[in-house]
Amino acid sequence: MKQQMDKNSIDTRILEELCDAVGRENVFDDIEERVCYSFDATKERSLPDLVIKPHSTEHVSNIVSIANKNSIPICPRGAGTGLSGGSVPIRGGIVLDLKNMDRIIELNARDLTVTVEPGVVTKDLQNEAAKHKLFYPPDPGSARFSTIGGNVAECSGGATGMKYGVTRDYVLALEIVLPDGSIINTGRKTLKSVAGYDLTRFFVGSEGTLGIYTKITLKLLPMPEKLGTIVSYFDDFHDALNTSDSIQIKNRILPRSLEFMDAACLASLKEGLKAAIPEGAKSLLLIDVDGNEKNVTNTIAKIEDICRENNALKCEVAKTAEEREVLWEMIRSVPSSLFKIATMKFNDDFCVPRSKVKDILEKVYGLSRAASVKVAAFGHIGEGHINLNVMYDDGSDKEHSAHTFVSEVLKEVVSIGGTITSEHGVGDAKAEYVKLELTAQEIELMQKLKKLFDPKGIMNPGKIFV
Ligand SMILES: Cc1cc2nc3c(=O)[nH]c(=O)nc-3n(C[C@H](O)[C@H](O)[C@H](O)COP(=O)(O)OP(=O)(O)OC[C@H]3O[C@@H](n4cnc5c(N)ncnc54)[C@H](O)[C@@H]3O)c2cc1C
Image (cartoon, rainbow, N blue to C red; front, side, top):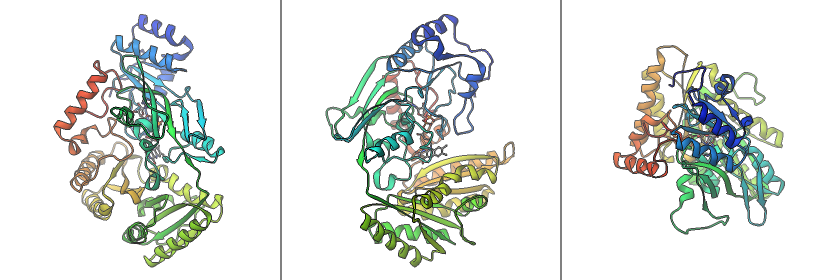
């Protein structure tokens, strides 16, 4: 971690040049402001030397060229909700806060596209699309705060991924400021385009290490007519997993969302919730389906039957939007309610082939008992995605065991064909585990590509690769 200093270490001449380029009112070097930009949603902490809040592509391009000329690290930042340390400036330098670039530039309902600046909040875009009876499906749990720029940089997923895919599946075109300050445009505002290499996809999920998105064109879908929601509780997680299999595989139903929570999550939730969790519940499935009215009603009834056939303790179908909200609030409350179990938590997201979910959960619980580590698992189980939270008290000797435990779990994940991160990215939190999944040759190739775009290594240094 970078040493904390009261004084920024950027030369006065460079500071003046930056102020001239973007306006003094957008450049901050006071300690109060810098502290606010020294963390994200992980426990990583590191002070930037400067915080700059650009308002336009031209501003971003000017800042980046000055930084490049003077080899100053740049760390792009959206809302700082990242779970892998991506927007923490671990090598100091400039944090570029993109939240002031928050215009929805053009929503074209006939073309089913929308072009936005990177600082638009995900939920605001979803709401704007809904006014036109359109749907922007990617829906991370942080949608009320996270930005589209952050979503694209992490290729965020979310609860709708099962039916609708992840952010990558919606990005059509990008305006990007490269590390030398030049501006490129990738992709087209068309629903298809295969001219040349797919630079758009290459930049999606690049975690702010290759360039800065300044405009993003996304695909929209027609809004489904109706949304149905059902929750089911089980006293054994195996029954919940069998239910998920029966829904997706045996009965060939494709829900919009299929969320899972284990016993530790449910136990942490019990106080102060509007939803009534039945006695003895040790796991939960929350399932959304969408489509036309008749289909949704029939499918929800069918899913209720499947849950009961698989020993559900209780099923509850949401009859109104408010009841639906109460059920989804349970899912959204888990990350914070887990702090009742311990003061620190490492949030590890991984994905395994969906047929291997039972094996990995059994392994996780077995390993955690052996290592006396507290864990809680939830996630988009229909896709094989699991958020594994490893909890320990701050300053306790359990931090080391938690770390060793995570590495054992990730080795296991990779050995059964899974990935060390499915949504949250590598950042610096998971950089040491990349070699579990990628070969030395693959890592070298990626590093060569990084060098091609960013020869001086100024763009979000210290991320993805150790
Ligand atoms: C309670 C909670 C629930 C969450 N649920 C989910 C979930 O369901 N699914 C999921 O995928 N994630 C989830 N997340 C993680 C997080 O919200 C996402 O990774 C989100 O996309 C981060 O967006 P942000 O605007 O906060 O970006 P930041 O955290 O500020 O930055 C994330 C990364 O993007 C880069 N970046 C930001 N803007 C730009 C830009 N314009 N150009 C280039 N790089 C840029 C940063 O450098 C950094 O590497 C959750 C987080 C929390 C706290």
